[in-house]
Image (cartoon, rainbow, N blue to C red):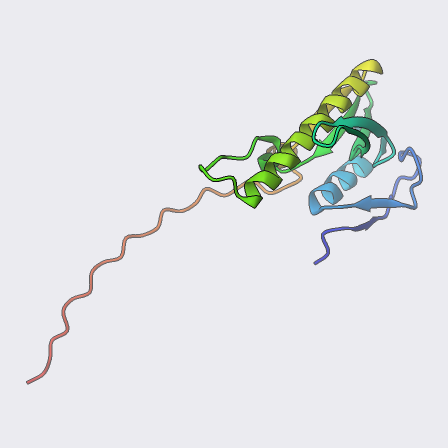
Length: 166
């Protein structure tokens, strides 16, 4: 199963940009694109059409941030949306060792914070909102199945001793 690909826009009049080149980079993005395309609440939407410059604190250089979504609703409200796993919205847990994985997760977290700060300012300058949609938000919207509560594991009953025939 492909986790990225081209999304075929059904309501081309709702898409603000090049509707023939809409790329989803996760199945979550694909589900949100479909929702935007079909929802009566959404008047206009676009994906990766808004580009925001941001300063990455690690290398002290400016980079470009392509917003996952820009959505305009029927009430006139416009928001910029980033779709991310909940895990990537929090700093990595430190287990007492500076492992390569911990350092990479830390760098990703700093980069995300720099991007989101720039996006927040960019949106505020235009009177828009900025939101991060995680799997919890997507579940609440009905775009992902609700997480199932884990069933408790049954305790194993001890085996009876084997009786040997004499």
